[in-house]
Image (cartoon, rainbow, N blue to C red; front, side, top):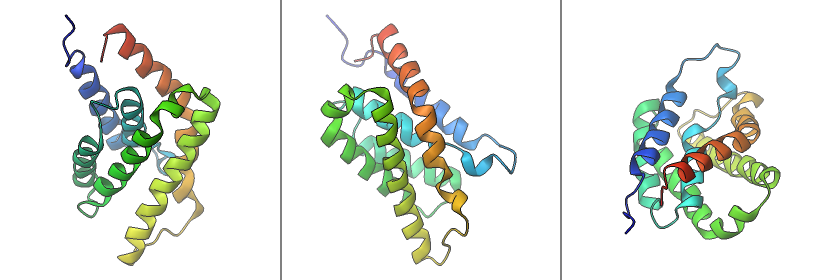
Length: 161
């Protein structure tokens, strides 16, 4: 008999590592290129385990991300909940896409993420000033295949279901 919560620690650990990578100090030239780690890990788990990771998890992760980044409380929560909702709607199709096509979709999703964040900060009068604001979409798109393979292999090795 399989335990329904098998491998929950893998999910928790991957999300914790995503938060640590988000908080990791980078040189000034590299900081704008920081991938959207939390969003990418959330997208993977929503796609792989849609019955286990969903909008509620995304909302809680977003609140933690708001606190970590000092953002407007609820900003990332709203955006990650929308991202999770979108992935949950298309997870069956998304799973069968080749990695290149998945990467392109990740880039579009992160652009959507950044667009809503820009809109929210713009309402507050803090709109981004440079083109590098959009760089995380490109870096996330480039790193998605490696993140996908690593998380998939961990999920299979530890029988996360």
